Every structure is written in structure tokens, then in C-alpha cells.
Length: 286
Ligand code: NAD
Image 1: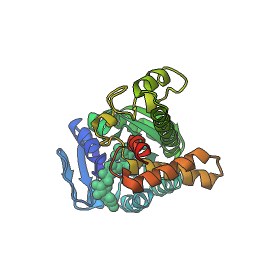
Image 2: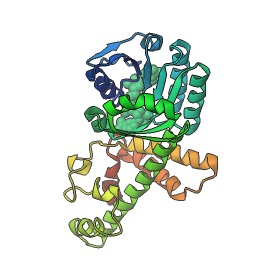
Image 3: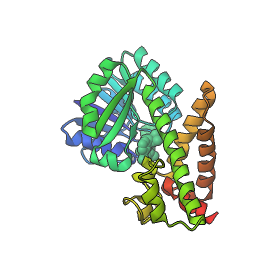
Image 4: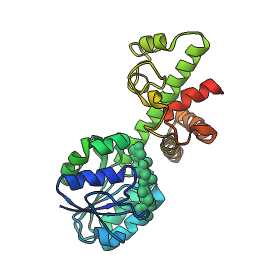
């Protein structure tokens, strides 16, 4: 298949490389002029997409996705598959779906979880919104870049799933960090805290799989000096999307909003560039 790939950053570069390694002809474009092994560099978006049967975008935010997709629909062949894998707001996701449909393109929103490690290993999870038929066309390509693809519903449903999941993650990580912090304050050892909570009703992914306390539980970013992993600023971005969506829809998300405020403060006070689980260290210092 001829594939155009726009946005060859930390996530896009390994995803495009995996498509190329699987035998697809990938043409890539990035404003930073990034080169990726196996990916033919294009000078413009139009050059990357004009002959492509499938086009992927992996970009920083909704405004950029809207601008890039406006250029894509002007240059792409009718019938081409257009998949946005960026994490963006649901409204922008729906707007670019409409843009694509007007240009006779097949469109999906397909944000991912799994981070840069998952992108490199080809083990991402894709959360997909759009028509069932479009999902079937894209599935073999998702299977190259990931190990799971879930069709979540109509346009925007993939972004909705991503935002809701990451709001749960942000809240639960704060809860686990506060649990360890309170345990420290009470003189309870972190090992005892982990051994009890991870096999009791406090068990959750943030504790059992991504434990923020170094030296206890599985090896995580905490055991690697809190090098991300999943960076604080990305968690803040996702919690801001969730808080904005809750406000726009009138949904009750008091803890989600509080989590956003906690991560905004942490981001400003040294968390930027560090793993989001370093909040535990921050609580201990405060
Ligand atoms: P990144 O900043 O490393 O990459 C984005 C790339 O887009 C950059 O190389 C940039 O030069 C390029 N770009 C910006 N504007 C452009 C334009 N107009 N045309 C072409 N290229 C342009 O970011 P990333 O970590 O790869 O993340 C990409 C998306 O994936 C984000 O939406 C992020 O929230 C999401 N995401 C990231 C992770 C992660 O762990 N990094 C995990 C899941 C989802």
C-alpha cells in the first residue's frame, strides 16, 4: 500500500518505520524535517499524500490537526483512508471527519495508548471512531503498529475513549501517590503499603503495574529516575482535554478537574519532562 505519514515525532517516527518495515511504501512529512529509516521524505504535505491510499497523522494538538487535514483533503485522492492518531479534542476530531467526508475520503480518529515504547515495539492500542467499514480497511495497518484496535463507535468516539481513560489514569495516579505519601507520614514502609494495597481494594493499574514508588512493585519509570514513560505535560494535556469536555457537555468530573489543577501545578513546579508518576516525589518534598 502507498501510505502518507504526517508528523514524524516521538510517536509518528516509529509508527511510520513499522509500516515501512512491514513492506508498505511510506512517504513522510514533518515540519521539523525529520528523516526516518525506510520512510521517503516529502517536501510538502501535498507531495506526501497525493498518491497515497492511506494517510496517517500524528500531531501535537487539535488546531494543528485541523490545519494539516485542510491541506490533506485538498491534495488526497478520493477514496483514500485518512486516520488521525493524535490525541485531540472530540470537537476537532468530528470537524476533520466532516472535512474528509466532504472530500470523499474515508476517515477515522484513532488515538493510541502505549507510549513511545509501544510505538517502537508495534504494541500500541488504537481507540477508533468512525464507520465500521473504514475500521475494517484500516485494521491490517493498526495490526502492524499495535497489538489491539477497538472500534469505539462513530466519529470522535476514539478520542472520547482516550480522554475518559486518561482522566481515570490521572486521578488514580494521584490517589496512589497520596496513599504512599500518607503511608510515609504514618511511618508505614512502602513495601508493606504496596504488598497490602496491591492485593486489596486499593489495587489498580497505577499501583500494581506503574507503581510510582521506586524499589517496590514492578520495575517502572520510578526505578529509572522518573524518566518518561509518560511525561507530566502529556498527562496535563489529556486532563485539560477531559476537563474541557466535561465543561462543554455539563458532565460531572470534579475529581478530573482537580487532577488537572494538581498536574498543572506539578508541571509548573519541576514536573515538566519528568514521568507523571514523579508526583509522589513532589508530594514528599512539598
Ligand atoms: P512530538 O512533538 O514528538 O511529535 C509531533 C511532530 O509533529 C513533531 O515532529 C512536529 O515537528 C510535527 N509537526 C508539528 N506541526 C506539524 C505540521 N503542521 N505539519 C507536519 N508536522 C508537524 O509528539 P509525540 O510524542 O509524537 O505525540 C504526538 C501525538 O501523540 C500527540 O497528540 C500526543 O498527545 C499523542 N500521544 C503521545 C504519546 C507519548 O507517549 N509521546 C502517547 C500517546 C499519545
